[in-house]
Length: 475
Ligand SMILES: Nc1ncnc2c1ncn2[C@@H]1O[C@H](COP(=O)(O)OP(=O)(O)OP(=O)(O)O)[C@@H](O)[C@H]1O
Ligand SMILES: [Mg+2]
Ligand SMILES: [Mg+2]
Image (cartoon, rainbow, N blue to C red):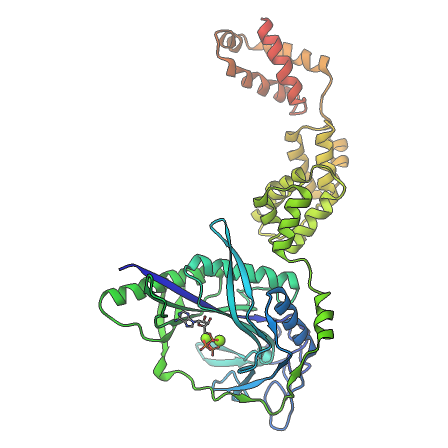
């Protein structure tokens, strides 16, 4: 029997607010344990939470970017469960009235765009962090009360690859919006993956398992691949899938059961009496609308349209807003944006990737990329020399003009000078001349190489080829 996988993702993003969702404690990552806490986020009796408005701004912003329905009226609910990292014994979340419903995340797989529908997005507070050590277990409450948005997709993805693209696309968008840094290793973007299988053609959903503990997109994909295969084998062996939460084990590449439905939590949700309901008016939404920047998909289309870039190049450039901005700065007022893009994509990113660095780290100023391409265009330096110049630009932050001057790299375009060198090379290589005359026309490459060697790569390659061809033919 052929099976189809069905996947729905729950993504938690930590919002980039300065302070926590219901108190004024700092949200900075990496502080010594339990230094960013107060009676409110520690759940002391008698304290009252006060909502950080920035959290609402960010939720509305995401709702606008993902075309969600923004609920004018929503409220917080208590999700009750017991765990050492949850000081109050409940998490403040949203339940029957979330701030956002519907909408979609657009993904690009196998050359096509596809919209992945969303069920809802709600606001909630993060819990603390349990740290297990050989001498015991510890809790760090710095994270307790950090604002989160939980983005719940519909069960409409059908492959690990789609799930991976969904996460990448969502991450790109929240980073563009500036509401989350999307760092999965540090846990500021987390994903639980729900997955089931069903015979192909069946519309009814199968029993799902929920996968946790993946800290990179690649691991989400791997965990899903493993789990889909596992479920198929269980069913093919005549077994039944049990609804359970399973943990991904990076070392073994397997998922293993954590808890089953029987032990599943009954959260006893109810509206939080300590917090007033939330009303959002049109004015508020309009104000946030003005803050939504151009998003990756729109930027991609504009880059193709406005600069005439190849689509696959534009796709790489818009991956990070900072890279896209760098390109635009470099291409400013220049007539050949594709050449600029080529230098950024192959050379600059090549250098940066090798050192595991980002575009923010480069010493090269965007306008220096433009200057370099102009030097090539004007014939002052060859493309080959330009690569050497680029390496120096990368290391020293000097302008290409300065490097060319200092190192005497100006291209030789003087015809008679090149003719002289060509004559020398022909004279010094009688064997190669014989070969050429006997019909081996590609020996010309050897002669070009010799001329370039003699001129330290500075001879204009077009001229060298032209002069060599005519001289060799005359022989
Ligand atoms: N049969 C199924 N197969 C695959 N995915 C499913 C199936 N049924 C539901 N899902 C997905 O599971 C997810 C359920 O998330 P939701 O937050 O609503 O519930 P939950 O996991 O029970 O709650 P909690 O937030 O407490 O973990 C959704 O992304 C949904 O698309
Ligand atoms: Mg959930
Ligand atoms: Mg869940």
